[in-house]
Each structure stands twice: as structure tokens, then as C-alpha cells.
Length: 125
Image (cartoon, rainbow, N blue to C red; front, side, top):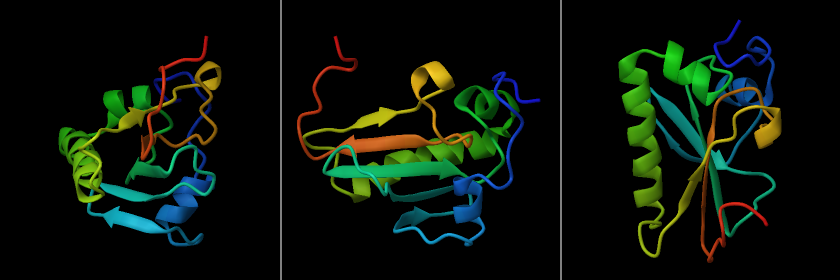
């Protein structure tokens, strides 16, 4: 059972299938630790998902169970993707949803890189 309290990892979730090459994705970046690709339903002009290469349900699960080299490599990949896409100026948002109340839709830990316009406040009023 994952540390996050979410259901066990589903090997057939869409991100696991993308990692295995069963579903195509518009890749932006890939290394031993992470895969980044364009979101199919973008919420900003730039909307890229970055997922770790491993069976982690959530950010809590990833932080508790992933080896240190994967954690470091994943976050370095997030930074590298943002820089390679030219997002450092004027800026970007990194978003990770954890659980139902946060709106996590896919039970595989991932972060959203959002940019390309002013993004407004963190939460709606």
C-alpha cells in the first residue's frame, strides 16, 4: 500500500503505459529518471507533464519510497525541461496534485510545468 493512502499503484495507468511505449506522447525530454511530454489537454500555452520512471502513486509515495538518486534525478529533470523550453523568463509554475481533494487524476506521481501567460493566483477564490 502506498504511503500516501491512495490505492495501490496501477501498472495500467496511462502514464505507466506511456513509459512502456504503449501509448504515444509528444516527448520533450527523457533520461534515466524522468520523462516529460506535452499535456493532451493543456491549461496554459505551455503545459508539460514530468513523470518519474518508477511506480509511484503520489508525491508522498515518491518522497517516502524512491531512492535518493531517482528523487534528485527527477527534480533535476524538471529544472532542465523548464530551462530547455525557455521558461525561466518570465517564469513558470510547477504543480503537483496529491489525492482526490487536490484533483489528482492519474495515480502516477507527476508534476505539471505551466507557462506562457500570466497564471494568476495559486487558488481560485
